[in-house]
Length: 299
Length: 299
Image (cartoon, each protein chain N blue to C red):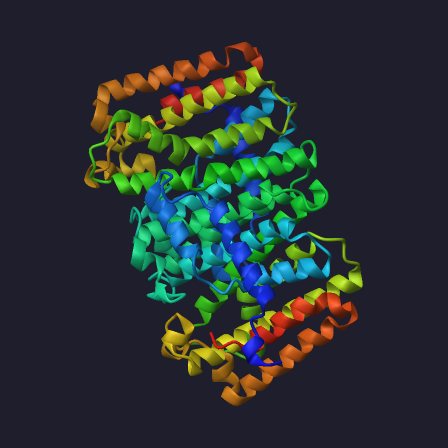
């Protein structure tokens, strides 16, 4: 696949689609309390690759879902992701000043308001799912909320962040690193795919296992590329501070494997993603495109 | 009512009940990531008045609910409350070192882990509700999740906290102060009551309006008593730093009304709470006892 077409029209359209849906889901900037709503909108809108939303829409296509139903799942995972970025950037965590090409939320809105904005974005994610028009039955809708909560909580994303914190400066084995990333980024990526697919017809066990294998491959691939870009990218291309991991003594795929083997791992994981979806045929087209884009992205 | 019996056996039993339910809902301290789970358990277990849980159980009794069904609602509101306390105590917010008679979570577990523990406790609240055995139908169960999210988010508790932040050092009118507290503490108290009642038979419109009037009265009453105790109490009796509001230049009922009129307001609100439940007769017994306790409490 040619990297020039790695961001196909479909992805641009879906990214615009979730942007509008996020805009509608967020309280207006002039609704009280304005400082909080302004901080929430600042952190969510107008930037971000929307990878998780795109994965939700693409998995929805796999299961024949109406994009209008997937919107709510896409919005919910993007809100969870945005809240996690605000909190990760805070001075007591990664202390970062640049995110998505602009000052981080606490730099722009103050630490206290950024903390609250993250809190309220997490709440909003669950509110959106709880009020969404129903994909199937109420039982499945409630299961989707449970699924997102499990992925975001202490046994998922927040747990991965805690492992990351505990490991700064530690020597880490590759399997420990993979476990950390499986939680920190992998859990929410898997949730995005499962939520999106859950908006269509029920997948059978073989199909949902295949989707989970795809999720594991792109989730890990996404992280390895992040580590490679942290070494090779610039703040301008990345929209966030480059070289931070090495500076903070964080273990990465590059520090553990070396740069060249890390890039080989990216290619392997991309193949794995494609292979896992083989049985779906053309229905997996968008997911395959996204696996390519995740492997080939430059920011 | 004699203050000596302001904490009846029923309340002690229900407080123990929710303590056990919280213990079961929280991941074990030795489950990975241990530092996160230890911080979550530290902030939730072994202390706290459990007012919100007691209100949920008492509203459940009003509606003839099985306490075993109310457990999940009680746990969810206590988890939301605990998360909000951790984040409120952080250095970038109220910067407090003492809570429920022990060092605040960030003092004991570090700022980063406390931030994550708060995040993960919020997630867990929604997970618990999404996985709870059903009080009624799936539709009502999903409505309960939406209700809790609305109460906790930017139009509820987090919004009230943002208003509080924006108003430090400001001259505030009584109505602005009441609006702030209606969100900051009132919204979650109302949610506790509605969730608890929602575990029993459906209330009709008149009944649920009456319960909302009770909620407004005890929610506000709780806050006025807090302000009075902040002036009259000691750190030892309160289990948290006393005199903080005045020190931080925060507007309170005492600073706006004076101490004696603030106490009169507490008595009025207690009467209002009782009056609003008159039509329920003996079924409102526990709610009436809690209204007394909220007015007469010394910590």
